[in-house]
Image (tube, rainbow, N blue to C red; front, top):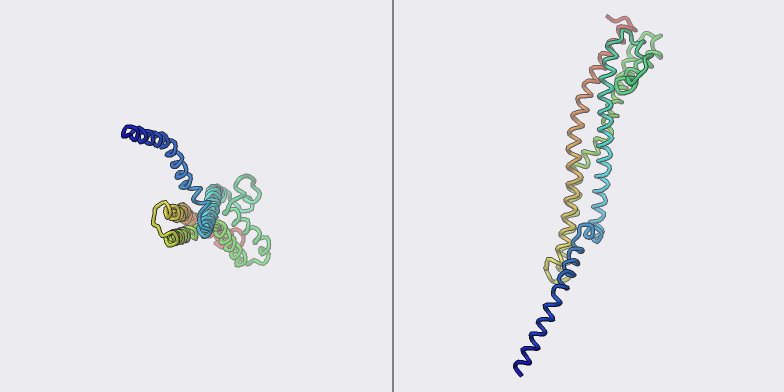
Length: 248
């Protein structure tokens, strides 16, 4: 009788051992699937999902501004240097307007073009004040054009971390709510909610860090370019006075 009982127990243990290798991969696969990042995002709380969507919009728009502003500033600096050389190599301002080539673009050329158009309108009146006013106005327009979009980078750099923090706080509150409903503090219950909360903070930082880096970079570059354009504007006004109004 005892030997029959031992044989039966050994058989049950053998069957259990045979089923364990098959059950473990299934459990591991289910756990891995439930904790995948995309799975957490798509199954997150609607408030957290909306927070992630807002951060994604901030990030996409910021990178679009970063790429476009890099091309614009690089082109502007190159064309400004080219026009400077043409401006000082040409003896008379009238000769600059008839020359062709790549120098007929860029902020410096636009300021010069505004001076030419103002001269055509006010030269007969022998008044330099309207010409100077149009040149100053064109200079300010060019600076505004270079600065366009830069404030959004500053907004992203300052607001994105706090938006991400809001998503994190909401996710943690949701995790505590689940604990209260289930009556259990098991990590398998609250873990996904804490994970989705931390994802909001990570995406907020991912949107803010590039924005603040390129904001500082572009502000310094625009400040230097603005100083160069301001010097050119003063030189242009002085040359207009000498060539068109007889000021020596």
